[in-house]
Image 1 (tube, rainbow, N blue to C red):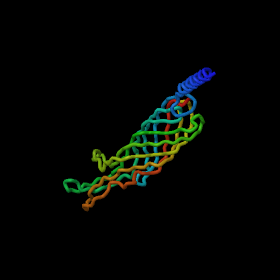
Image 2 (cartoon, one colour):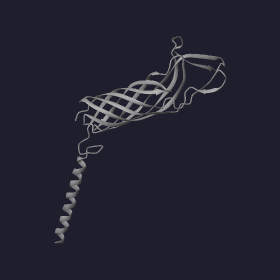
Image 3 (cartoon, rainbow, N blue to C red):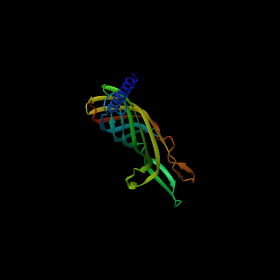
Image 4 (cartoon, rainbow, N blue to C red):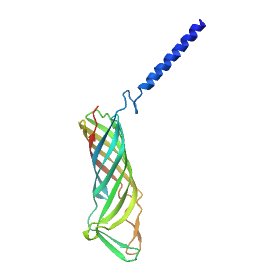
Length: 226
C-alpha cells in the first residue's frame, strides 16, 4: 500500500511538471495575452504645431518604429522647424575683437530627434486611443536670413527635449492610419549668452522659449492588420 501511494505521488509530480513545461512552451508572447508575439513596424511623416518664444511654429520630420502585438512600439524620430519667429529680428553683438556687429533679419532655428515610445489601446477598433513620448536631444540657434550673410549662425546651444502626448488614431487601411496628438514639449538646457553693444551679458533665448503645448499630425504607413 505504501509502495502504491509513493508511486502515485511520483506519477502526479511528473504529470504536474509535464503540464507546467507545456504551459511554459506556450508562452511565446512578450507583453501579455494568450497569442504568440506578432512583430511589425511602421514609418510616419510628422507635422507638429506649437509656439517658439510666443510665435506660431511648424515643425516637420518623421519617425519609424517596431510594433509589438499592435500594442507597444519603440523607435526613433527627428523634427526640425520650418518657421519660427519674425523676420527682421536684430541683434547687436560685441564680438571677440570688441567691435559691435549688427545682425538683421534673424530667424530662430530648432531641431531635435531621439527615442520614440508608445502604447496603443484597442488597436483593432476603427478609432482608438494611444499615448506616446518622444525623448531626444537637439539644438537651438539663429541664422541670418539675409542672403548676404547666409552662413552667419548665432547662439547655437544643445538642448534636451521631452514630449509626452495623448492621441486619437483612425484605421483607414490595413497599411495606413492617421494619428492626431496633443501634448507638451519640454525643452531644457538653453543657456547660451552674448555681450550686447553696452557690454552687458544677455541670453540669446529664455529658458522657456521652446517649451510649449503642441499638436501633432502623423500619417502612419506599415503593418496594422491582424
